[in-house]
Length: 202
Image (cartoon, rainbow, N blue to C red):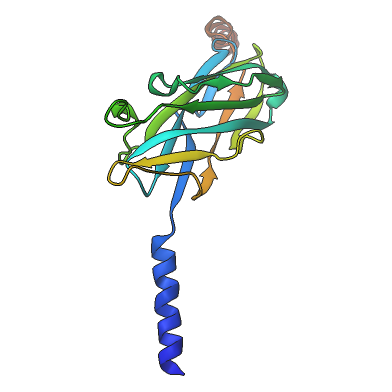
């Protein structure tokens, strides 16, 4: 009985150790922006996986919350290496983007995987989002990546060793928050400073 339990425990560990996963995350989001000066910012979408050698393709959508009404437009574009399979599904309004599909053709030796798609410790840039907000808008804008409802998988990974493609592993989607702050202009601050100085003199 003890041996059976021990074997079951070892089998469970082996299963956990062989579990494969991937992630799509947001990189480069500013902690805050002065919306009296900046109304457009860009973030990169980074893919990572604990298996395989290259990112073959994938898809995601953007669901924003918080100050989402401040978002005027979101434009998505695939990285240059993934532009073959690019499909920008377009902006839906309120900070939501319907989805971006990205991918490349891999058929060695005629079409080897692009060097830029090789998985490294820092991940692979698969695309970017250009986000435009209303001038003077305020509040916390939460950017949330999510599964593209029109696509059968989130990420496909190619393994150079055996030529296999895998799009069945478990995945996770990242998020980021940007504080929209309509900071006063430099001239207004100077004027306020002058008023304070004038009061002190009196």
